Image (cartoon, rainbow, N blue to C red; front, side, top):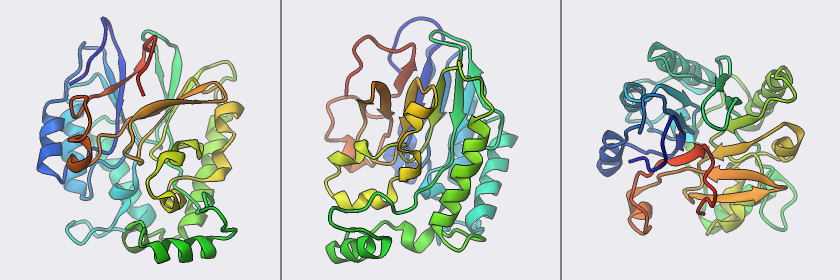
Length: 286
């Protein structure tokens, strides 16, 4: 359930992972607090197209506006999914599914939040990663992967996330970064921006990972300066399953994931809690 004040509010959540029955139940319980509330969904809804569609349809029927960007789990070509599309074709299929439901995607014009704290451009960004968040002591992707395989900490993307028709995931990432830079440059320079990404724009959130080598699958150094380069109000992201508020160079970063049941059961706060982005709380909790 959401928790907040009066009037329209801008909420965010990610990593719903509704393949778990407990997490599907959490989505069943998510409700806005006013007719004008928006919800930002920063990826990893589910592994199958059917489940993704169920979740975004459920949420779109409740919130005034739902904005979605994919995580790595949506992009997997999972053996349990009847949809066998890979890479760009799979992503484009998910975009069409969302559009049919009135849900905004990274391929649509950026929406403007005019509620409390606005106006702010809400920009769902699909950027991927390029293995540039290397483990300490490694200088190349090859060294980093060798180290990760040696520790046994290897993202399932290596088996299920295909970059077709790009040769590699990093090639797809670079193409996405270049296209996103082009679109962001078209925004008014004085309009505050809320980028909604699955992978964090900056590496600092990965410093708390229990397994630092997993950072290789968590973003790209190509976006390290975006929170300074663009007028970012708040950077919304997920993927790490460490919900908290941090600041980098004075800019607010919000990790908004639900995570797996084994993770959220250990937290003191109620599971499935949406994180309020606007209006900003006076003393946001990490």
